[in-house]
Image (cartoon, rainbow, N blue to C red; front, side):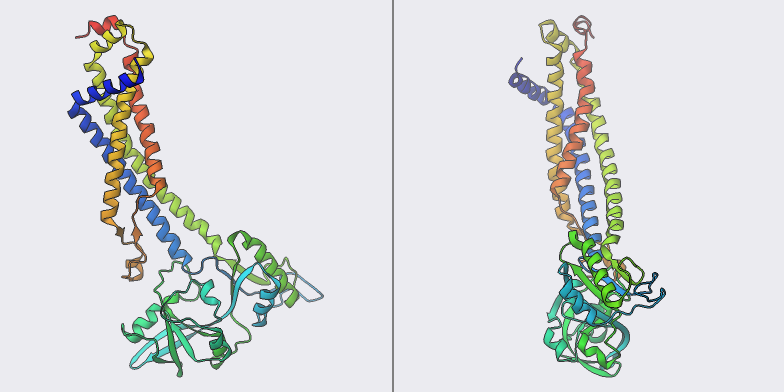
Length: 418
């Protein structure tokens, strides 16, 4: 018997047992649908968590002064190292692996607009800071080099600060006072859902030019230097070169990691990746169990088919059919059922994920109604490939057992089967 003949024979058999076939296809389709939805949720969960973490900065590195732990150049250990404003320019010129760098200083202020007041954080920064920290301006503009060199009293507001000071009205162009000093609002930042920050979330901060910070205090010694490497692959070497340059400027040993603390936020991405992987594995395991249940149903249906067609199998073998041909006949039938169930399941999974669209995740936690922290469901290519692979494995195992049983039947006993 040829493949073509056996294929059409399998179609005829499935059509004859159409009720049984339909139930089996629907059970497999349900398993695939659940698997696709769960995988889509896992992908959306990972994307939302990563986005919330990287809101602090795409590849943020923070550097602040410490205390020497080794003697160097005749200077004693235990000496404090204070970061200076000029260090940023020196690093910018000497370390080409640094993509952007900005000094940053911070303090708490009382912001007032009209009768509204709010305690917020004030950050004095350079224009490059916006790129380093993933700042997105939704109204107005960000700080410019002219604002910094001219020491303009201008401010960019975080989303929560603007909401509490202006109650939804446009803040750009309005005046606010920061500890009694007047500033003009030039920009409004997009609301951030941050699960990583330092000092205070950006939504609760006000950003002013570093050159304008002198009205509040000393700007010669910033609290931090924040920077980003030209690429993630160059991060380790960039940190090494920056530390060496700081050691040259402040005269400490280049291998003294306590003299200047350098913290790359990317090191915490392993935690986020681990959480995402754990959730995906759990959801994948649940989805695989659901598919396995459909596979058990397929095996039962195929075994019942073998029993019902025992005499037919005996006749085929008595007329000269080989064992492999009988095996192949039942495997083709199982494959057709698996293929139909898989196609229907993937289609239903795509429709369901499209109808659901998104699910709340971080929004309620941060009291954000913008939907930025939601889990967006969409059927990805990996989800389809994984579900197909799992389905093929389950279908092969479920179809092989009854196929082997049919191929091993003794033709004489099969013909006398009642």
